[in-house]
Image (cartoon, rainbow, N blue to C red; front, side):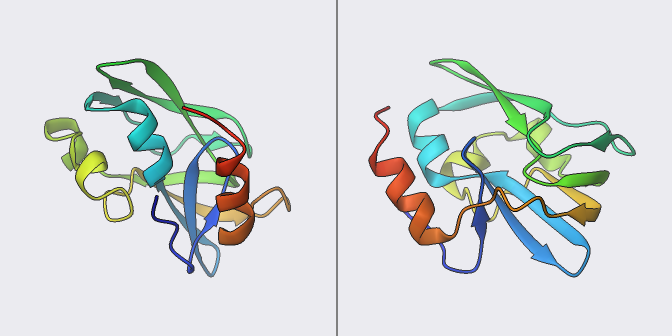
Length: 126
């Protein structure tokens, strides 16, 4: 399991990269591994407001359907439309295949450091 040091993590298995007031969000390596081959994605709606922890989309794999949650609060300002045609990018490059971006990212203190996330995942079983 890869856990990049430059990101923060939600217990719902999204990663978040904060740059000023903007946040880029995707699914972690742990999540894509647990889901298996991803075959379909419901992207969030651009312009929608979301609170931290709120479901904003879905990811469907050969094993299950899972919610994609906003790890921080803010307004969804961009989605990675390329994932509509090739959602498997999340499996092959989970930290390059971002799902959405948010403006006005509001940190609520619930995000985990890389070390905390790795420990959290070690306590879970797929």
